[in-house]
Amino acid sequence: MSDSFRLMHTMIRVKDQDKVIDFYTRLLGMKVLRQSDNEAGKYTNTFLGYGDEYANTVLELTYNWGHEEPYELGRAYGHVAIGVPDVAATCESLAREGVPIPRPAGPVKGGTTVIAFVEDPDGRSVELIQTG
Image 1 (cartoon, one colour):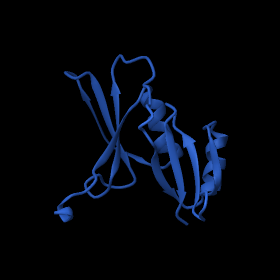
Image 2: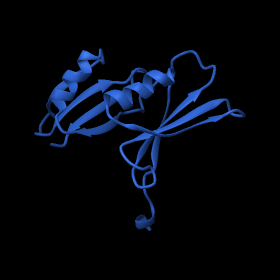
Image 3: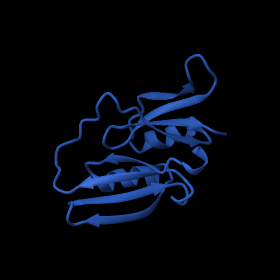
Image 4: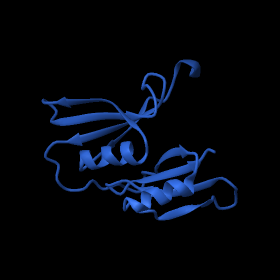
């Protein structure tokens, strides 16, 4: 049964759609795959990713029109993980853009994998994992 299943996307609600799209595209290299407005539901969905959404897992951003206050992230939310070739260099680049880096590049506690945690414009954690 699992051969026919796949993880398609993760959805997050965003307060400032343009800022969040800029963060994931310009700073983290994703591409906008598609975007649509839903007049009846009063929201915009933007799908971002590193490859075609029919073959890759992507990120769905949902912007609810007229929702002005920040969303509470909740304790159950963990993070989005993104593989990058050089975590330290990526953190340096993000720091120059003013991106908060609460956990700088370094090995995971008790291991050797190099990781870092940064925050998107809404304060969500994004884990960077070294792949190179």
